[in-house]
Image (cartoon, rainbow, N blue to C red; front, side):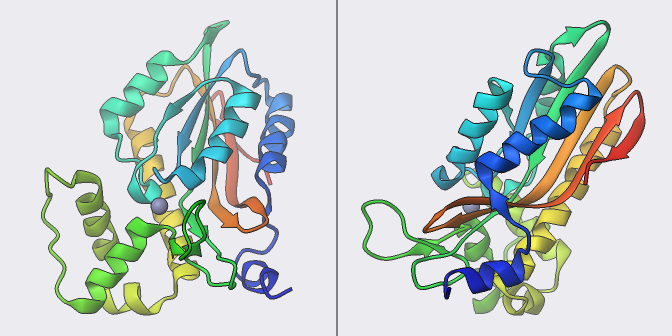
Length: 237
Ligand SMILES: [Zn+2]
């Protein structure tokens, strides 16, 4: 059980990705959400490892608006969020959104968290590679927090992480705890976008967690889940 121990310790209760998406349907059906009246919005990392979860969401909820970025922060911003909102179906005067916000972490065949064995490669690579790159930069010297127009997402991720934690904490926290911290920060950023928007005609659900890539399959660790119906927030867990 060497592969399971770090995951079970760091992300207790993680469930199969398909099961997670099935659960979103079960949790939201009583609140009037279905595939015909809801637009999925999927905020993951750009990494191709994250795609199986997107595929499950599309199968259950239909085509989804892509909120994804390096590190899974909602860098689509006000304009991207407005576009997603304008694409949602309008049924009896209500529009509905299902929003996933999840950074990711791999575990390789040797049980190392933060690494993943990719098809066709003999050596494991980092996952999330964007987050690992920031940690390495913090470990080796002062980090440039300027916006780089040739590297916009990574420079925004770098700035956001450096604002979140001192360099030594970014390096020393451990990849699992750091991913959980980033998960919460990504949710905070998403909720700021939502608070900035006119949501009067929208009912929406938010699922915030961490995507886990294991040699045995895709898992989701769910941390926060709620639905807002006619302005009232209802916990889903
Ligand atoms: Zn990533």
